[in-house]
Amino acid sequence: MKARMIAVMMSVVLLALPVALYAQEPDPMPIINAWVEALNAGEIDAALSYLADDAVVHIVPPAPGTSGVFTGKGEIRGWYETVVGQHGVTTLSDCQVDGETVTCVNTYAEDSFRSMGIDFIVGEWVVVVRDGKFQSYTFTMTEESLAAIMAAMPPQAMPETGGTAVPLYAAVAVFGGLMCISGLGLGVLRWHRRQTG
Image (cartoon, rainbow, N blue to C red; front, side, top):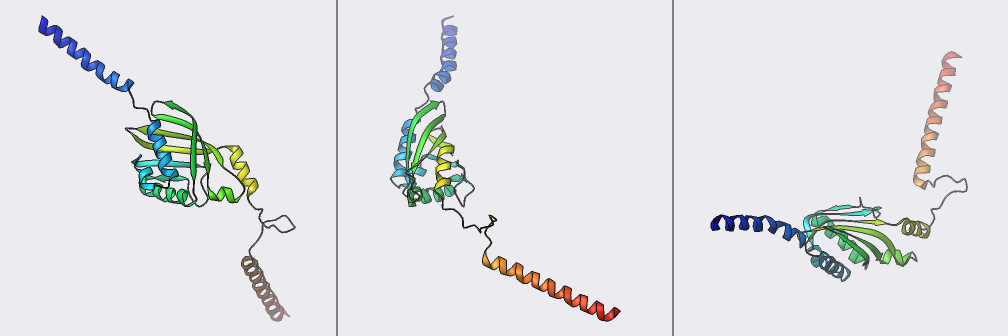
């Protein structure tokens, strides 16, 4: 009987152990803070060490010349090289932890924004941290920050008609094509008159 009681108690302890382990999930904030510190210092390899090999980064809206999606450490390294080259600085605040998901306000500054007279942009930053590694994160710029960027961009040179600007080579090509077609049309018309006249 005593042996049976010990076996039952061991079973209960073994069944309860996984629940206790899940309840003691490690706090993801030290990992997140170390990543921010490494990236802000321009230490790309150190920043990448906090990401899973198949991590995915989403930037919304996408930066010019990119799809806004970077998959795997190779593509993310390229993105980080751009960030470091622009002296990018990330500041996270108001972080809310919900299991593996952390949502923060991300205030981001870089040289290209400073050159437009914008001190920083703001967005929502959502990261999934599992087994001590970033599985994915998404930065979504606020509408206010996007509007500030659009307002700071130089206006495109538009003709007085309000239409879109056409490059000179395109205008010359179209004009030349119209002249060729007109010339062929006149030639056909003269030939037709000679044949019937």
